[in-house]
Length: 208
Image (cartoon, rainbow, N blue to C red; front, side):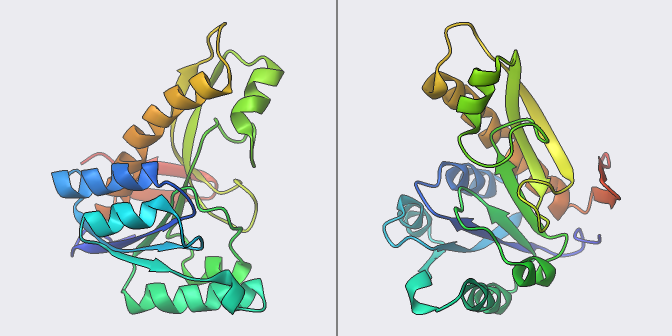
């Protein structure tokens, strides 16, 4: 990948409050991510993340799934929107739709997601509840590339969070979320700088 030669454009897809979006916004504004936040798109009109984007001067777009009879048609419209903004990297931040194969092919190797578990353990939803039910001693979060599976793409970066004896879903989720906010911008910046190298299922992050 040769992302380092010019300033890159990031698009963020959200469905809710956008706390990881806020971490990305803060990193862009603070210079920790040397890229432009080109557009924020949500499939939910009331998503608070859209207001976060507008507050910081970024374009915020609601794309209504009900306007498209099929998922593939919605994703095709989303691809067109992102390409029209010259998107180099698509970041999922609480985006609650499964991307179609066509979308993934359109941005192959350029879609990141943050997941609140140490993949490949506990993919999908309700992962903190699953971690507690399984009695694991450590959980955490994972930044990974998105492929056509559910949380199965190559792992870029992870952070480990201990599971404490008194934890419930809320307390464990809160500690994991802090680490999500820390490592997602780090992974994005590594990509922007051209330091992320994918070799099969292994991802190497080159030193600066």
